[in-house]
Image (cartoon, rainbow, N blue to C red; front, top):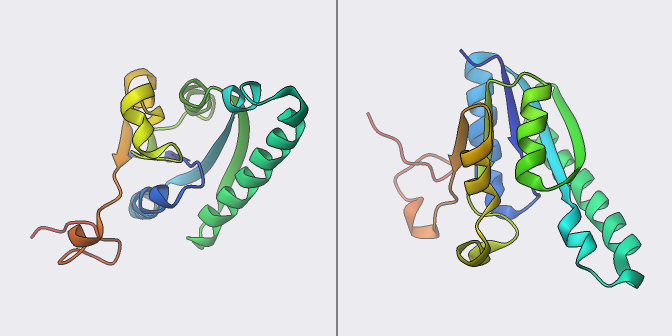
Length: 156
């Protein structure tokens, strides 16, 4: 039984399908929805000193926009949170703090194909999260044919 689900979002286009799938799952189980955005402090720290404050502010603004997009996808109440730190670690910590039954995330975020070089946040979440993780990949344009409106495959 899923009573509480955390949707980890980075605001990327590729996470939109994960948000929809997670919200559908939450609706089916009448689960409480939490949307979480983690400001990656590694990105801020790796920027030049003179740009760090601007980078931090821009990422906080992006966080608010990403959480607003999750809220816009549903009529249900959504608890939102912005954390700062390493995304995979913060997602696991937040899931534990709110006693989540599941975490949902996309498989490809803002870093796109670089995941093969540095390892994706989704992979680290799957390996380290204390609760089950639902990973939802974005389908290619040609994969959406014959599925539902989200491009998800459906079977009878």
